[in-house]
Structure formats: structure tokens, C-alpha cells
Length: 460
Image (cartoon, rainbow, N blue to C red; front, side):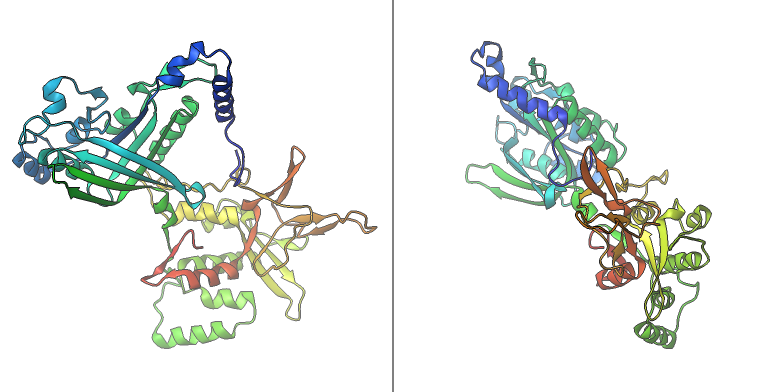
């Protein structure tokens, strides 16, 4: 399914919506009374925190027995009050005996929950209100949730749901992910998100969840001796949007003196052509050096029509997968200027493989979707590259009603931009060829003022 803003829902979700419409609109609802009148919402909040000896000792002072590790998180999942893992507490002691300094008190639990999407759905913001009824309960909540940056799994849905086949079912603990989450089944963030998405589809839209971090919290002590606690949780998409690309200079292997830097800056200001700009920018940062090296390969490349690319072996020396990720053409001006380009999808793949964060097995912690067939945008038959100083695309324009034949612009580029799918013309965003000088200048203006060696990935 392509990443198109405004695209349709998954077919399974469509079927669920139609089934619910049929149930609510049915003249005879006899088979659906449990679903229509007996369902209640559930919210389940699970902490990922492993406590250390210091925290365990502090909790002991409050009479809370907590061993090091994630035993406390397993024993105090906020679900139906607080559950022990997936098991609901039973009996007076388990339900009313959490903290005995004020006698029997109710279990702590979630009293309010709301969630909303931000940034066109890339981030989910969740606000949760929790009630604790004595000091011991507050100490437990404090250890598991009241720290900025703590990560949590939040799950929600209804106790009863209906399948796309019209079968009424109960939501059970086996339908949630907290047990696997606590047992370490998911080794990284990517596996958590995959499990959430798989469960959404498996339960046909009757389940939802988010994995995020605590970004704010507050609490107040009330006159009746209870604590009102507020949590603000952002899904980890906000980390992705603040990712910094490491651009620290690899340069030419030498450190420039102040005089040399001033001279190079003067040369850069006076540069007329893209080749000169890339030449004088090569020591600014590693991305500029990368583009300088690509330029050198392109200058030695063999033209295909009006476009020059590089060989796959040369591309791999640069950290790219294919020579089709680079292109050069000579713009016929008074300077006969060479213009240099990198394919957008190829650049994103390079950044994922070389400039972000990685697991111990060298797999990327964050995966970027650079698939040309899944990143689709709206286009028209008349879209073409109007400013080659920014980007170029391969396009054929057929002016209907005109006697002249169709016009092909940058027809020798290796990758097609436009494609017709089921009678609809779409554009492949990853096959836009972006001007290298444009990227270098953009990076220079977007560098973090507190860290000149990094650039926000999403600002770029």
C-alpha cells in the first residue's frame, strides 16, 4: 500500500466498518446484544522499566517488595486497576491491600485516557490520568512511570468485539502484547511496532496500541490523601523527526588552517559552476565530500544520450547500491555547465545504511522506506522539471490537440518518474533526481546551531 496522504484504509478495516454498519442497522439484532450492550472499553499500560538496587531499596522503605529487574513492571500493569501480568487481582488482600499504611484502600488505576495523532499521523500523543490511594501506591507508580524518557506500551480496545464474519468474541489477555513485551520477546523498537500492526490486522481493527516515551508528567496530593497523576506520552515517531544526520567532515584527511578555511570560503563565494561549488565544499562535511567524489566519478562516466551515470562498482565505493542513483547532464548555457544529481531514494538508503543508529548486529535501528513503488505522489501528464538547479525527473509531455509530437524531457535518466497504475497516473517520489549543490546549500543552512556536525533528517 503506497504512502499517499489521503489514501484508503486497509481492506480488512473497510470490511469491519461495513460489518458494524450492518449490525447497527439490522432489523433483528438478537444475535448481537452482547456486542451492542455488553462491551466496555479497556486500557492497558505496561512499563518497560527494569529497576536497580537503589530503587529497590527505596521501595523497601515503603513496604514494597521489589526485586531488581522488571518484576515490579510485571506485578503492576495498569489494567483493571493493576494486574499481575495478565492476571486480574483477586481477593481482599490483592485488590485492597496494596500499601497498608492507611488500611485497606482501592487499587491504583487509570481514570482517564485520550489519544490523538499529530504531524499527519506520524506521531501519536496520549494523555493518561492515574489515581493512587496511598503513599506506597504512589511510590510504585513513581518508580515505573514518573521519569522523562521512560518507555511504555499502551493498548486499548473493547471487551467484546465483532469479527468481519459477524462472530461476536470476547477480548482476552492473549489478544494483548504486554506479556511478550515484558518477557523480552521484542528485541527492538521495530519489532514492537510490527507486532502492534500485525495485531491490529489480526483483530480486524478492534485493537490499537502505541509504544512511546514519557515526555511530561505531573502529580498532585489531594485532601483525601490520594494522588492524581498525569502522564503525557509521545510515540517514538517524535524521535525519528528529530534524528540528526552525522555530517562530521571526513574531508581530505587534513585539518585546514584558519587562512586555508578563509581562502576556501572566498573561493566558494566566487564559484560560478556546480563543479566549482562541489570542489570548494568538499571539506565542509562528509556529505559534501561524498558528492565531490560522486562528481569525480560522473566526470569520468560514459554518457547514455544526454545523461551520464556511473558504474555500479563505483557507486558501491561511495556506499550506494546502484550507479543509477547518480546522474549528470550538461546544461547548454554560456558556461556549458555540468549539473550533478543524486536519486532521492538512493540518498535515503545511503543515509539509513551509513548515517543513523545501528543495533549490535549492524542492522539499522530506524528503517527508512525508500521503495520507489510504495512512495507515490499525485502528478499530472504535464508535470516536468522547471528548475534543474533543484531537481529533475524523467517525463514525457503530450500536449493534446497540438500537431507537435510528445516532448520527452530528461528521457535518458535511468529511472522513470511517472507510471500509470489502473488508469491513474502516479509519480514515484523516490525517482526524483535532486541536485547535489542544492542539497549541500540546504544542509549548510539547516545545520544545528549547537552542533555544526549534524543536520535534522526531516528538516533536510
